[in-house]
Image (cartoon, rainbow, N blue to C red; front, side, top):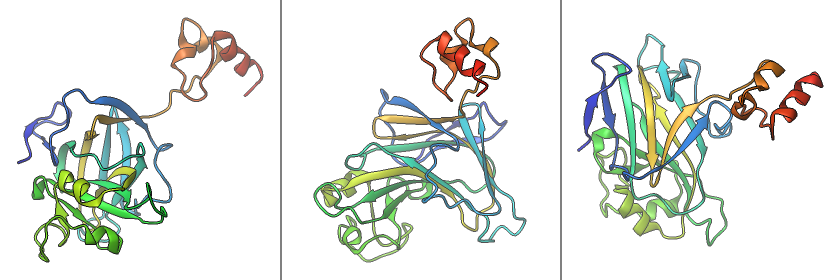
Length: 242
Protein backbone atom coordinates (compact mmCIF):
# COMPACT_ATOMS: atom_id res chain seq x y z
CA UNK A 1 0.00 0.00 0.00
CA UNK A 2 1.17 3.60 -0.54
CA UNK A 3 2.85 5.21 2.44
CA UNK A 4 2.16 8.71 3.75
CA UNK A 5 3.97 11.36 5.78
CA UNK A 6 3.40 15.00 6.72
CA UNK A 7 4.79 17.49 4.19
CA UNK A 8 6.97 20.41 5.22
CA UNK A 9 5.77 22.27 2.12
CA UNK A 10 2.09 22.55 3.00
CA UNK A 11 0.60 22.47 6.46
CA UNK A 12 -1.51 19.39 7.10
CA UNK A 13 -1.02 18.18 3.51
CA UNK A 14 -0.33 14.50 3.03
CA UNK A 15 2.54 13.31 0.87
CA UNK A 16 1.67 10.10 -0.92
CA UNK A 17 4.17 7.70 -2.41
CA UNK A 18 2.64 6.27 -5.56
CA UNK A 19 3.41 2.74 -6.75
CA UNK A 20 6.31 0.57 -5.62
CA UNK A 21 8.95 1.92 -3.29
CA UNK A 22 12.10 3.17 -5.00
CA UNK A 23 15.65 1.98 -4.25
CA UNK A 24 17.21 3.72 -1.26
CA UNK A 25 20.41 4.47 -3.18
CA UNK A 26 18.78 6.18 -6.17
CA UNK A 27 20.79 8.59 -8.32
CA UNK A 28 19.47 12.12 -8.67
CA UNK A 29 18.60 14.22 -11.69
CA UNK A 30 17.01 17.66 -12.05
CA UNK A 31 14.32 18.11 -14.70
CA UNK A 32 14.75 21.64 -16.07
CA UNK A 33 11.33 23.26 -16.46
CA UNK A 34 10.10 23.79 -19.10
CA UNK A 35 13.16 23.06 -21.28
CA UNK A 36 13.22 19.32 -20.56
CA UNK A 37 9.52 18.81 -21.18
CA UNK A 38 8.78 17.15 -24.53
CA UNK A 39 6.41 19.40 -26.54
CA UNK A 40 5.03 16.57 -28.68
CA UNK A 41 3.94 14.63 -25.58
CA UNK A 42 2.68 17.60 -23.55
CA UNK A 43 -1.02 17.55 -22.71
CA UNK A 44 -1.34 20.57 -20.44
CA UNK A 45 -4.65 22.19 -21.32
CA UNK A 46 -6.19 25.64 -20.84
CA UNK A 47 -6.95 25.20 -17.14
CA UNK A 48 -3.84 23.17 -16.25
CA UNK A 49 -0.73 24.87 -14.89
CA UNK A 50 2.70 24.20 -13.39
CA UNK A 51 5.51 26.14 -11.74
CA UNK A 52 8.74 25.21 -9.98
CA UNK A 53 8.63 25.47 -6.19
CA UNK A 54 12.09 24.92 -4.75
CA UNK A 55 13.05 21.46 -6.00
CA UNK A 56 9.42 20.47 -6.48
CA UNK A 57 6.82 21.20 -9.12
CA UNK A 58 3.50 22.73 -8.20
CA UNK A 59 0.72 21.52 -10.51
CA UNK A 60 -2.88 22.66 -10.47
CA UNK A 61 -6.11 22.84 -12.44
CA UNK A 62 -8.52 25.70 -11.87
CA UNK A 63 -11.67 25.42 -13.95
CA UNK A 64 -14.47 25.70 -11.35
CA UNK A 65 -16.31 22.93 -13.20
CA UNK A 66 -14.16 20.10 -11.86
CA UNK A 67 -15.19 17.64 -14.55
CA UNK A 68 -14.17 19.98 -17.39
CA UNK A 69 -11.85 18.36 -19.94
CA UNK A 70 -9.71 21.53 -19.84
CA UNK A 71 -8.71 20.61 -16.27
CA UNK A 72 -5.55 18.73 -17.15
CA UNK A 73 -1.81 19.16 -16.66
CA UNK A 74 0.46 16.45 -18.08
CA UNK A 75 4.16 16.70 -18.97
CA UNK A 76 6.95 14.27 -19.88
CA UNK A 77 10.74 14.26 -20.12
CA UNK A 78 13.17 11.93 -21.90
CA UNK A 79 14.11 8.76 -20.07
CA UNK A 80 17.38 6.82 -20.39
CA UNK A 81 17.00 4.15 -23.06
CA UNK A 82 16.40 0.68 -21.72
CA UNK A 83 13.73 -1.69 -20.41
CA UNK A 84 10.94 -0.71 -18.03
CA UNK A 85 12.02 0.08 -14.48
CA UNK A 86 10.74 -2.45 -11.98
CA UNK A 87 10.06 0.13 -9.27
CA UNK A 88 8.71 3.68 -9.24
CA UNK A 89 7.40 6.24 -6.76
CA UNK A 90 5.98 9.75 -6.56
CA UNK A 91 6.10 11.98 -3.49
CA UNK A 92 3.21 14.43 -3.76
CA UNK A 93 2.04 17.09 -1.29
CA UNK A 94 -1.65 17.68 -1.94
CA UNK A 95 -3.23 21.01 -1.08
CA UNK A 96 -6.68 20.35 -2.52
CA UNK A 97 -8.42 17.88 -4.81
CA UNK A 98 -7.14 14.90 -6.73
CA UNK A 99 -3.60 13.54 -7.06
CA UNK A 100 -1.63 13.00 -10.28
CA UNK A 101 -0.63 9.66 -11.71
CA UNK A 102 2.91 8.70 -12.69
CA UNK A 103 3.36 7.71 -16.33
CA UNK A 104 5.88 5.73 -18.37
CA UNK A 105 5.94 6.08 -22.17
CA UNK A 106 7.55 3.14 -23.96
CA UNK A 107 7.99 1.44 -27.31
CA UNK A 108 7.11 -2.22 -27.09
CA UNK A 109 9.70 -3.41 -29.62
CA UNK A 110 12.17 -0.63 -30.36
CA UNK A 111 15.23 -2.50 -29.07
CA UNK A 112 14.78 -5.30 -31.58
CA UNK A 113 12.04 -3.98 -33.86
CA UNK A 114 10.71 -0.97 -35.72
CA UNK A 115 10.43 1.62 -32.97
CA UNK A 116 7.01 2.90 -34.00
CA UNK A 117 4.88 2.13 -30.93
CA UNK A 118 3.57 4.65 -28.44
CA UNK A 119 2.35 3.11 -25.19
CA UNK A 120 1.70 4.52 -21.73
CA UNK A 121 1.64 2.77 -18.36
CA UNK A 122 -0.08 4.70 -15.58
CA UNK A 123 0.64 4.29 -11.86
CA UNK A 124 -1.93 5.66 -9.42
CA UNK A 125 -1.99 5.27 -5.64
CA UNK A 126 -5.57 3.98 -5.70
CA UNK A 127 -4.38 0.85 -7.53
CA UNK A 128 -1.42 0.10 -5.27
CA UNK A 129 1.45 -1.55 -7.14
CA UNK A 130 -0.60 -2.19 -10.28
CA UNK A 131 0.12 -0.08 -13.39
CA UNK A 132 -2.52 0.04 -16.10
CA UNK A 133 -2.03 0.41 -19.83
CA UNK A 134 -3.91 3.18 -21.66
CA UNK A 135 -6.50 2.24 -24.27
CA UNK A 136 -4.60 4.17 -26.96
CA UNK A 137 -1.61 1.85 -26.58
CA UNK A 138 -0.70 -0.67 -29.27
CA UNK A 139 -2.18 -4.12 -29.72
CA UNK A 140 1.28 -5.60 -29.10
CA UNK A 141 1.49 -3.95 -25.70
CA UNK A 142 -2.05 -5.03 -24.79
CA UNK A 143 -1.24 -8.61 -25.78
CA UNK A 144 1.43 -8.69 -23.06
CA UNK A 145 -1.22 -8.01 -20.37
CA UNK A 146 0.15 -9.62 -17.15
CA UNK A 147 -3.29 -9.74 -15.51
CA UNK A 148 -4.33 -12.60 -17.78
CA UNK A 149 -7.97 -11.58 -17.56
CA UNK A 150 -10.36 -9.23 -19.31
CA UNK A 151 -11.60 -7.12 -16.40
CA UNK A 152 -11.72 -3.54 -15.18
CA UNK A 153 -11.15 -2.02 -11.78
CA UNK A 154 -7.51 -1.13 -12.39
CA UNK A 155 -7.80 1.82 -14.75
CA UNK A 156 -8.07 -0.52 -17.72
CA UNK A 157 -8.30 -4.28 -18.30
CA UNK A 158 -4.55 -4.45 -18.97
CA UNK A 159 -2.65 -4.16 -15.71
CA UNK A 160 0.09 -5.56 -13.50
CA UNK A 161 3.09 -4.57 -11.44
CA UNK A 162 6.08 -3.04 -13.19
CA UNK A 163 8.01 -6.25 -12.60
CA UNK A 164 5.20 -8.22 -14.27
CA UNK A 165 5.03 -5.84 -17.24
CA UNK A 166 8.78 -5.92 -17.77
CA UNK A 167 8.83 -9.72 -17.66
CA UNK A 168 5.83 -10.00 -20.01
CA UNK A 169 7.00 -7.52 -22.63
CA UNK A 170 10.65 -8.21 -23.39
CA UNK A 171 12.52 -6.00 -25.87
CA UNK A 172 10.67 -2.86 -24.85
CA UNK A 173 12.40 0.51 -24.64
CA UNK A 174 11.38 3.37 -22.34
CA UNK A 175 11.03 6.72 -24.11
CA UNK A 176 9.83 9.14 -21.42
CA UNK A 177 8.69 9.56 -17.83
CA UNK A 178 6.02 11.96 -16.68
CA UNK A 179 2.88 12.75 -14.73
CA UNK A 180 -0.75 13.62 -15.38
CA UNK A 181 -3.41 15.33 -13.29
CA UNK A 182 -6.74 15.03 -15.14
CA UNK A 183 -8.44 15.39 -17.44
CA UNK A 184 -11.59 16.36 -15.62
CA UNK A 185 -9.84 16.51 -12.24
CA UNK A 186 -9.56 19.64 -10.10
CA UNK A 187 -6.53 19.63 -7.83
CA UNK A 188 -3.55 21.55 -6.50
CA UNK A 189 -0.33 20.27 -4.98
CA UNK A 190 3.44 19.88 -5.28
CA UNK A 191 5.29 16.92 -6.78
CA UNK A 192 8.29 16.81 -4.48
CA UNK A 193 10.02 14.04 -6.43
CA UNK A 194 9.47 11.14 -8.80
CA UNK A 195 11.60 8.01 -8.83
CA UNK A 196 11.86 5.51 -11.66
CA UNK A 197 14.17 2.56 -11.12
CA UNK A 198 17.49 3.86 -9.84
CA UNK A 199 16.94 7.57 -10.53
CA UNK A 200 15.07 10.17 -8.50
CA UNK A 201 13.90 13.25 -10.39
CA UNK A 202 13.31 16.67 -8.87
CA UNK A 203 12.56 19.93 -10.67
CA UNK A 204 14.34 23.22 -11.28
CA UNK A 205 14.91 26.11 -13.64
CA UNK A 206 18.04 27.35 -15.38
CA UNK A 207 20.45 29.57 -13.48
CA UNK A 208 21.00 32.60 -15.69
CA UNK A 209 23.55 35.28 -14.72
CA UNK A 210 22.58 38.92 -15.22
CA UNK A 211 25.99 40.58 -15.66
CA UNK A 212 29.72 39.95 -15.87
CA UNK A 213 30.03 40.94 -12.23
CA UNK A 214 28.17 37.77 -11.36
CA UNK A 215 30.89 35.75 -13.13
CA UNK A 216 33.29 36.50 -10.27
CA UNK A 217 33.95 34.49 -7.11
CA UNK A 218 32.90 31.26 -8.79
CA UNK A 219 29.61 32.62 -10.05
CA UNK A 220 30.44 31.50 -13.59
CA UNK A 221 30.24 27.88 -12.48
CA UNK A 222 26.64 28.29 -11.30
CA UNK A 223 25.35 29.28 -14.73
CA UNK A 224 23.41 26.58 -16.56
CA UNK A 225 22.28 28.72 -19.50
CA UNK A 226 24.80 29.09 -20.99
CA UNK A 227 27.43 26.84 -19.41
CA UNK A 228 30.84 28.56 -19.13
CA UNK A 229 34.29 26.97 -19.17
CA UNK A 230 35.77 29.44 -16.69
CA UNK A 231 35.44 33.01 -15.38
CA UNK A 232 37.11 34.49 -18.43
CA UNK A 233 34.68 32.74 -20.74
CA UNK A 234 31.81 34.13 -18.70
CA UNK A 235 33.14 37.72 -18.71
CA UNK A 236 33.81 37.53 -22.47
CA UNK A 237 30.25 36.37 -23.09
CA UNK A 238 28.83 39.48 -21.42
CA UNK A 239 31.46 41.78 -22.95
CA UNK A 240 30.28 40.64 -26.37
CA UNK A 241 26.83 41.97 -25.49
CA UNK A 242 25.06 38.65 -25.63
